[in-house]
Image (spheres, rainbow, N blue to C red):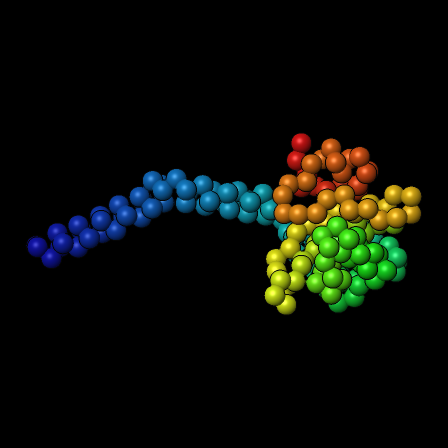
Length: 175
């Protein structure tokens, strides 16, 4: 009889723990609910949910790392092939002048570029090693590139609107 009561008590304790974890932990429940809702809302899998199923207007597959290079008129991975080396060098030169740095101590990676706008990242070398960098926004004004924004802070929408940046380059701006 004692054994049966012990088993019943153990089952009740386990059930109480499961109930508490599932229903009394609001943070975990919110995450579980969000996941369940996203699963329920996406019961039918579309090509856009699959890696490689997210082609942009040029046919570039973003989830595979491809973006459109206007200058070369093709999709490419910016870490494998520079879209426009001349532009990258011009932006590096702007940073060298602005921050009084040697060109070899500056690394610019262009992530998105049109004929007149670009977004990318910049890193500076410290003690011979490149450290974490920041965002770069540049615009071509009267056929010359100008740095519009560089840094790790928020990008003001009013600033990028002055230069007529494409929305896909500045979706993270703040008002």
